[in-house]
Amino acid sequence: MLFQPNQPVWFYDKRALWGWDREHFAQGSCDGIFEIAGISVGVRICFEVRFPEYFRELYARKTDLNVVLFYDVSDVDDTGRYDLIKGHLQTRAVENVSTIVSVDSIHPYQTAPTAVFGKSGQILKECTRNQPELLIYDFEKTEDDFGETGRRRISDTFFFDGK
Image (cartoon, rainbow, N blue to C red; front, side, top):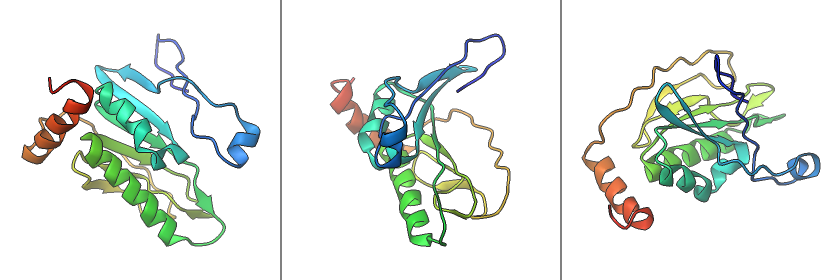
């Protein structure tokens, strides 16, 4: 749910359901895109990070910022899973020339980062794993650098006939 003053409440329901999720939830159909203060924001939930297609939808809709919400924790300290999901997030940022904010729970052991990834996959901010912290990031739209421009132009040929 997204709440904004004097605006309707907005919902996004996870679409990539598997295992326990599939047994307890209905698959969503919303595109997960909303606007706040002139910024187009795409939302994805947890397991969806493993599917580039969900993020290509956001690219095709030209979102400015993408947010991935996790509740991905483990009873054992699984640093390998943490690194894998972090890699997925970096790749989704690079593929889609998009800043990504990732948020996860920390208890008992955090298996996805709470972090901000730049349009070229660089880690702009990251909370300390398994520690209670508040991540504050002031997002501003920026011009693409040389590499980002190249990735965007080539990607555009798949979605917009190179326009």
